[in-house]
Image (cartoon, rainbow, N blue to C red; front, side, top):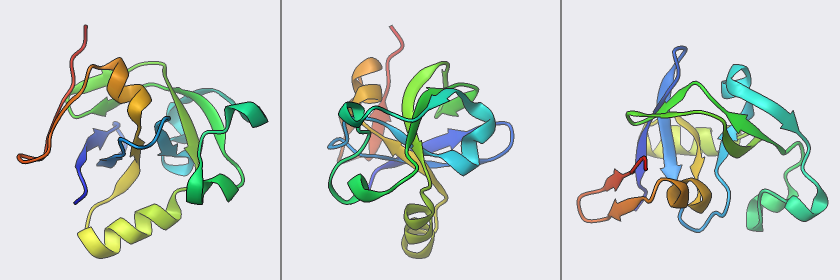
Length: 127
């Protein structure tokens, strides 16, 4: 089962996959280039991915602004950025959705997320 939620900018709309096993949220760099601030290459000690994504080159970090996660505006949200063509193609083929990134536990903790698996609902709190 995958859990996706709405994600939009003035230029496009799509979905992000909720990945509770990811420590850092990662977004598609090419789709969100205009929304990334303070972009830089991470230190080796600050790797933004592990497992299968650990060998992908070109990962950067920065802050994401000017986007909506469902109805919640994100401003200066720290995140990782990389080419996610492989993930976009996979979800487009099998689920017919446009994936812009993965929401990790950093953002879920920041917004005190509640995930209701049975109803496939993500609730975020802005405190």
